[in-house]
Length: 216
Image 1 (spheres, helix red, strand yellow):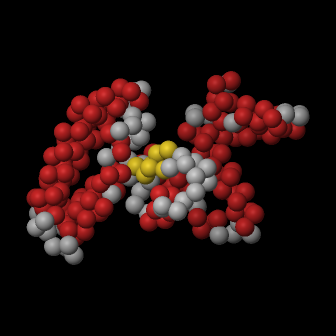
Image 2 (image 1 turned 120 degrees about the vertical axis):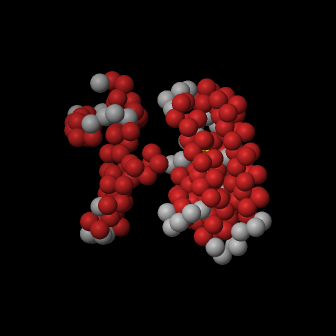
């Protein structure tokens, strides 16, 4: 992420904190956290028996997702406008719910831990209300990398560091093709052919998956 500045959508993995550390050199980064992870902790509580407080939290988060379902696919400006109009009041109710019950729940109980998680990442969880490009969760990315995660045992046999880096590069390109509606095999074949035929390195951007999608 060297040189990157802007909003990065992440889960609660502590390693991402390095990107917002005070001593980081480079453009500023804001982390947008994932409501699916926050909701999951509450849902796990409801599965163990009656849990009215957790169920109330799940219902409030469900209301946020209902708004997202209606504006999915809209342009960022429209998404931002609808969110500020309809999602902001929902999040305000959720904040009240969080403050009320966190003051009463044992910090070491499953509910207390779930509430502490939401409170810890609350600023980043609200980031989607400030920028229409930001998603409410990072489920799209998680679904995309699931095949890679399932294949991680095979990756142990990359051979050496360079092999692992090449593996990661190819995997990134393949998944980028999928995100842009491009068949990875077709793109890879066309790109390698273009390189062999002398495609100029200064024009390498023409071969990137999102540009290739426009030309086919």
